[in-house]
Image (tube, rainbow, N blue to C red; front, side):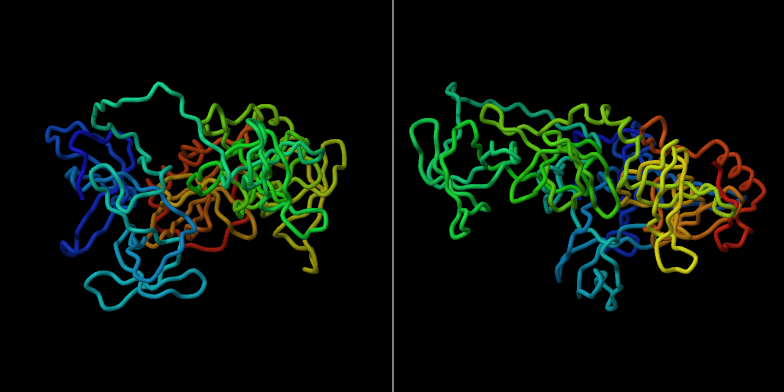
Length: 488
């Protein structure tokens, strides 16, 4: 692995440190954060590991170390939901680090057998604990990432290169001729603004084209629809944009719906890779899967420009807090033993006077025959929080929501174990062990906005400091989720 001799990492950058603990043929990568880059030896930097922890004298702290720059690389972006093939070189997350291996067999339920170099036996790993192995070579990833992800997530200082180029003064305009794949904008009532894929059959003069649609058919459904369209209603097919783990709140997108692409904006990010998209043309909000969305791009003066989000987020802040029938929400419980826990639900009726009838997604009636429906106050209702991807391990003392007893409970990471497992501490001084998939970053709904909790709440912090001082956390047994746990 080489590094950019003209580049350096800055304080706070997230990196991975290569350690070859079992010989030069093995590769293990540990997540770390740069604490100081300007050391006397310019080929070394000072880092703090995120998963290597020292336990002693009633406290825990992350390991810090001065490491060679040649063994440090940027934190590679995660590619979630990626399928692997036999023989793929991958990294497996185990023992608090990424270890290089090879896919030897493919099992059911998104599981794989991975074998490490020099070992005859393999391990079974779930897909979420795997990533395609890449080397950081002279400022780029090998094999390369999709074009959009080629730049590192950190801000690297690139080497200065001067290029002398000659450009023609003549403006280059794309040619649309016979056989060109295009998209055509509809002006038909009920379909205005939608774009449909087509192929140019012929040109008519200088400003009209005869096109044949790819998804639209004639009235008798016997052949693809053909029609003459104006130059202003036709554009080349937009270039592909690298897929993303999730689309952002209020991001401008195109949605594949009714055989065409419709422009909208993400109004709500839901669990299960689903989104509520708002269409200004019809003033409608509909729910869609991740797979039918693409980044919105504008065709402007012969160039594709990424669509910018409008002020929809600001305009709809109040609308989002005025819950309506069909809205997916979370409801805070005030029942004894469940105070402070948040449960997913859908609003089924507006009762007036700040009251709503909600149906829970995970709570059942006493006889267990149907999902529970009950009345809830607006003060105890919040929108379903946007999904925040957290592919990398949670950190010590990070505030999280833990999924337990069919709801989300607020707690704090006090131990980082192997294999993406954590001990979470709750306000009653109880602690439980959770897997990575049962946790999510904690967010607060404040004044109509979601705010990520970057630091532990002061009250929880005081409790933790007291607990560490008295070594209570090391002695308390794990157990069932306590009932009176959480602050309101």
